[in-house]
Image (cartoon, rainbow, N blue to C red; front, side, top):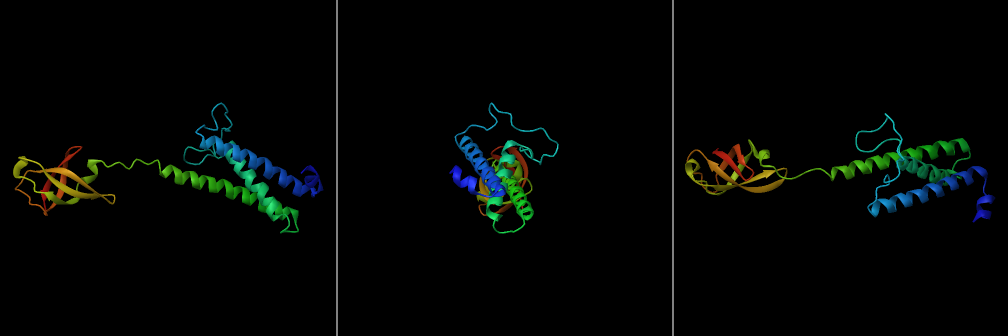
Length: 188
């Protein structure tokens, strides 16, 4: 292995060394992430910087440095024989490293969307129309049920009315939330 590495041109050797070390660190970071340990537990490898993106990740961190060098090293190895100018190889290696960092930001952004709270809240039904599922007795004398669509999901909740009885199949509008399971409706 060492003989093969020594037989390479110096610039290509540097790209291979960077790619190898960055790949090893990347694999270790990935394993640590998947077994549930945070890479920063016991290690504070993030740099303080004002150039951070919106979100819980920093622009200048050990993980992003690893991602950049991973793209830089492998980009240099891949583009080395493609271009005759070694300066152009370095430019494309840098661009590849930046693409790796941007790809990481994009993936984190997508993962953070999974963390969104999408629980149904009765207040989301205010001023929406619904179908009466079980007849609603007149004058708050008893509860009926309505089916209402909120964010693409149909929910069945208890309903009261202050007016006349609303039969099954009728259309209503939610005018007030009484509690987490009950709303006040009026006939449309």
